[in-house]
Every structure is written in structure tokens, then in C-alpha cells.
Picture 1 (cartoon, helix red, strand yellow):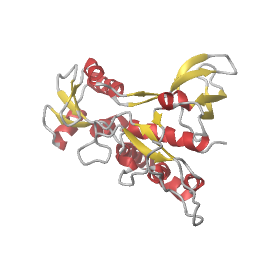
Picture 2: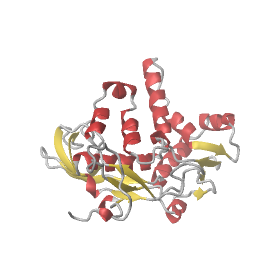
Picture 3: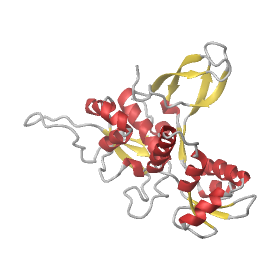
Picture 4: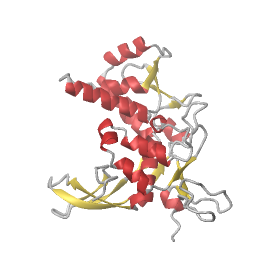
Length: 285
């Protein structure tokens, strides 16, 4: 087998390490065991609070996806509840003390891609809309070509942020000159924002996606961490500050880079695009 450790951001199991035992004993001298591998975390464990299982951890161990895990993916109940992905991650994580919705979004993305590769391979076939001719075309992506962005201290400072001692980030707003402290968002934040958006849609209320996101990101304003201060600042925040915070924030978030070359079979248009996470990702045809 070819060595994919550097390309995939994974490491093989130490041959001298004790074997994992996810599986069932089938006889006195024979048993099935699910292989595992280590997945490199984009955060390198730097931005988790003390006491979190991943605090200071550069990688996490997962089981390879099994037929039993496919049962989770086909559970209509879990799909309707919107918890199917978290349930899958909980099942494949070797360390059961890790809650999937506590993962930083970049780390969660890295795990999802790694799990998908163990289950269905590196080739990802899906359909997407060509940005030139607007036709739906088939496209194959190679998930092994992803890269990891760690956001080191120098890069963070280049984007205007200062790293706090607690793993948070401070940034001076260009228009208001207010110093805002932000934190990296987790899967729990993502779940909250999705629910807020769905509730507003059901109740026919106007969208507030941007301000809802800012409320989850911002933890203090000029050193004041009270909810009232943060709410008031966001309410009157200049649009210039809002856009600056959102664009610079996405530049420092540790994550996986999934951009690949897209080529339209219909019109010949070619450009680099982010690999889309469609229904085909975990439910391939």
C-alpha cells in the first residue's frame, strides 16, 4: 500500500501498540477487531479549554467505519433529528469522553473527511452547478488531496489578531476602534445557529444569521464580557467592522483546505472551487 501519511494528515497505528477491540469475539482463538488510525487536528489542541479531552492533543484516534456505522447513517430518526453526523462521530471516536458537538468546526471537518475515507474511499463523486453555464454536472474529487491549515502565531498576527492566554483572539475594529475578543466556534455553535435559522423560518420571522453568528463568536467588548454589552455593540456595530471581523476570522480558523480544480464537462469552464459537502458525501450512490 502506498504511504499516504503526509498527504492525508493521518498516521498509521504503531505496530507495537496494543490492538483496539471494537468488534465481537467469535471463537476461543479468533476475533474480529476494527482497525483504527490517528487523524491530525487542524487546531493541534491549542484552543480547547483546560479539562477538555482534546486540550493539547495534536491528533485523535478513530475506528474505521463499519457496516454497523452505516446503520446510523440510514436511521431516519437520527436524520430527522439532525444528529446523525454527531452520532456517527461518537461511534467512531476511540475516546468516548469526547463529545462531537464540542469539537472545533475545523477539527470536526477533518474527522468527517477521515471517517468518510475509511468507509467509502478517497474518490468522491457528486453533482454540482457550474458557475459559468449554471448546468448540473458530475464531478469527481479526490479527498486525499486535502491539506491542513493550522493558523500559526505569525499568520494570526499578520491578520491583525492578538492571541489571548486562554486561546481566544483580540482584534481592534477599523471603524469603531473597539477591541473585540472572539473565540473559535464549535459544532455546538453550528447546531445552535442552524436551529435559530430554522425557528425563524418556521415562524416567518426575518433572518438574523449574521448577528446570531457574531453573538456566538464575540466574548467581550473592550474587556467587558457582559451579555448586555455584547448585544448592544452588535446592534450598533458598523457594517465595516462586521465584515472585517467575519473575513479576518475565517482567515485564522484552523481547518482543512478542500479546494480542488473543477472542470465543467458541458462548457469547459475550469476553476478552483471548494469541494461541496452534498448528500453524496456520506450517502454515495
